[in-house]
Structure formats: C-alpha cells, structure tokens
Image 1 (cartoon, chains in turn brown, blue):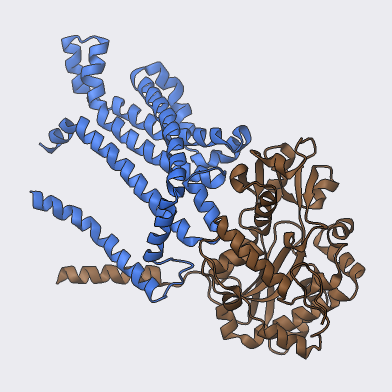
Image 2 (cartoon, chains in turn red, cyan):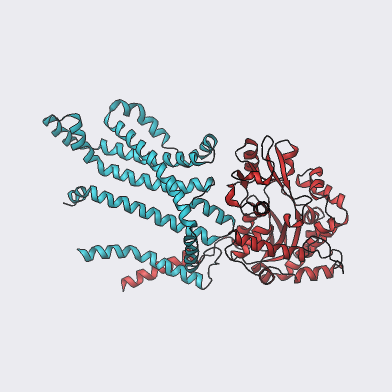
Length: 348
Length: 257
C-alpha cells in the first residue's frame, strides 16, 4: 500500500515536472515579431521599415490597445524558430531553410506572405588563392548553419559537382565569422558587401544578377495557435504590413535610400537590389516563384539531410486567405503581379 | 543475499520507468508539444535511422577518439604529477600551490584562451579535454599517496624496506583505490568536455551533430544525442568500475570485513 502511494507520488512529480508548459505565457495584447538579426541596426528595411517610420501600426491599433514588439534574434532564423516553439514569439519573418526545417520538424506555423530578394556574396580573404567554387574542395567554409545561406552553399556546391562532404564546415556567424575570415581561420563563407568595401574580403561568387532561385525567399509566418486565437488581429497586422509594402513599392530610389537606416550603405543596397524591380522586391504574394522554389528546396533539403521528413506546403504551410482579403480591402489586388519560377511577371 | 542484491538493482529502475511512462503519456496526449519534447516512439525511430545510416557510429567514433587522446594525456600527466607531489616533499612544496591555484578555474573558462592559442581544430579539443582529465587524476593520486596510513610506514621503517619495495608493497596498493577513483572521475570529466568542445567548435562528433540538429529544428536528434551521451558515459564508468573490482577485489572484501 505504502509502495503504491510512493509510486503515485513519483508519478505526480513527473507530471508536474514534464506537464508544466515551458516557455512564456502569452502576454496581453502584445504582438511579438522575430526577425533574424545577425548584423546591422535593430531596424527593418522595406515594408516593416515603413510601418515603423510612419507609425502605421499605432494608427491601426490605437483604439484597442495592442502593442508591437520587434525582436532581432542574433541566432538568426533558427533562433526565431526556437522563439516560436517556446511561445516567446508570435510571428517570424525568416528564410526558406529555417521555415521549411521548422515545419518539417513539426513546428505549427502558417506562412502568410512572402518576402523576396535576399542577396549574398561568397567571400574569401583578400590574399586567398581561391578563385572559383571548385577551389573550395577540402577548404574550411564558415556556414551559419540552418540559415538560408547554408542552403545556398549546398546549391552552388551542387552546381559545381561538390557536396558539403567535400568541404570542412565551420559553424559560425556574425562578427565571429567576419573575424575568422579576415584572420584566415576560415577560407570562405557567405557574407555582405561591407566586408569587400572595407577591403577585408574578396568576392568569388554572388547571387546578384543570377537566377532568383539563388536569392533568399523569406516568408512571414505566424504561430498557428496565435492565428486560431486572434484571426482578426492577424488580418489587421497583415493589413498594416501590406500598407508598408505599398509605400515601399512606390519609388525604388526612395526605398533604397530609406533602407540605409538599417546600417547598410546605399551603394551596397544599389549593388544588391539595383537589378530587380521594386514591385518584385516588395510583393507579398505567395505565388509560383515562392511555391515552386520551396518545392525544389524541400527536395534538396531532404536529399542533403537538412530535413528528415518532407511535407506538403500547400496543405501544411501556406495560408493565403488573409492576404487575399487584405489586398482586396486595400484595392491592391492588381498592384503586384504574380511571378513565375524565373521571377518574371505572369501576364494575364 | 542474492535476492536482496537483485531487489536493490531493481529499485534503481523504478523512477526511470515511471518517468518513461509519464513522458510517453504526456506526449501521446499532446500535453507537451512534440517540438519541445518528442515522444519516445519518435526517438526510437530517429535513433534507428541515425544508427543504420552509420551517422551515429561515425560521429561517436570521432568523439571517443578525442576522449581517448585527451584522457590518455590528461590522466597520465595527472598521475605523474600526483605521484611526484605525494612522494617528494620539494615537488609538493613547489607545485601544489600552483596546482591548487589553477584548478580553481573551471576548464570551460579556458575556452576563449585555448581557441586563441590553438584555433578551432583537433588540438584545441584534445588539450581542452586533457586539462579537464588532468585535475581529478592529480588530486586523487596525490590524496591516495598522502593518505597511506602512518602505521604502515612505521612498520616499513622497522623492517627497513628499500625504496622500490616500499612503493610496490605499501604505497601503490594502499593508494590504488584512490587512484582508481581518480581514473573514473577523470574519464567522466573527459567525456563531458568532449561534448562541450564539440558544441563550441565544429568538426564531426556527437556534440556537433546536436549543434547542427538544433539549428535545423530537429529536436528529436538533439534528444537522441543526449541519451546516447548518457548511456555511453554510464557504460564507460561501469567498465572502469568492473576493472576496479577485478584488480581491487581485495580492497572491497577487506572493507566489508
């Protein structure tokens, strides 16, 4: 009898320990958005930038007291996923690999909109004798594991008949990556133009001017539980965001100039985004460009062990209802065209 | 006697069993999201996939090689220093304060310096592990020798033993249990530190598998890693324990009498 009581007590303890929902309780009327924030100032470019600068959020929500919190997560996309998993974030805006690996790992999120056109540059130390991707064989490459440039590296290696097994992966990011590259502790890695401009690195390959499949296609995602609880708030937030995107889409030069507030030089923004139409860069639509690229990515990720099981994004990821309604209400249904897999507008 | 022993062993299994059942139930009824705590069934599947693809073995091999090298270097130098300090007064006077000063620093606090000196390659990992293995081994060897009962030495003095005979028949046998404890502590420290080293710097190894899995939102792989680490550590300690009983059986029986 005493034994049974003991066992029951232990069981109760176990339930108490495991059953206590980890993470943070949902605070009242606060919307928490997570962005990958490895470098630059904690400010957003483009759509969210205009929302911040023009107080669009405050305007929309002033009558009912919702506030917004922008979190720039140092550990980038994978860190945003952790925030979504432990309920410390409600929304995230991150790259194809983190979003798809999270969904494949069972994180319950829905993609509401697309965020296109992320660029990167494959850099080597200035005095390096690496000239082409093929020269990377056997070299130590700095990789921000789990982020979109990790996926990008797999793509470009594959184009050159190599795999991740042919290089030595060093998991690093941010300033640690920049330092390691300049000191020669690593031989190569994806980084930003600022390293080239400051004379600390040389570029051997870039996404700029290449097929859009090499660019980063982010999605703006929401935690499913939050969506179920506050569908109206999600829709209104999306509306605010689309208004910001609309402002960003009006004048390319103005928007690039505006984006320098994140700490990136104007010249670099022009180099990175100059070749693409502002409509393309600001379109939130989950169109063929996104869906086809994600479909291909899922196959690539599965083949390379980045995800262990695949899923159908049409069923398990995309939620277009809210964006469609918002575009209709703002009379912007035809402001942005749908783009195809090659990034070309589909003519009606 | 036998039944009592069996009962003791089984008692140790009760709590793990209860925890396992609670874990299974909680995840089965989705009381805890599977992203935070994958159900046991998923873990078995993941483990099987990692096992059959050879991924687990390859990485375990790398980690164990590092532990082996670090442990060998750390424990043997610890044994030498401990013995020297225990046997020779001048060595003790010169080195013991320095040793005691440096052993206050947790090994992980050396990471920034070691990375600076040695980079992120194998040297860093092996030096880091040997630093950790070195400390308990030195301490326990030194303790063991220092604690040879004075009465034994008295007897030895009466019989006028030579140096070598003294070491062989008195000091080593009576310090051996403590030295064995040093070995066990040192090995378990080495095993913990290899994981620490791999979490910091890349390369193959079970710790690195976990870092990458975390970045790719593979919670199940991270947890499989935790369990494999626990089982391996437990097994290594058991193995040393068995060796101890084999070589020091006399010690146990003597104490039991």
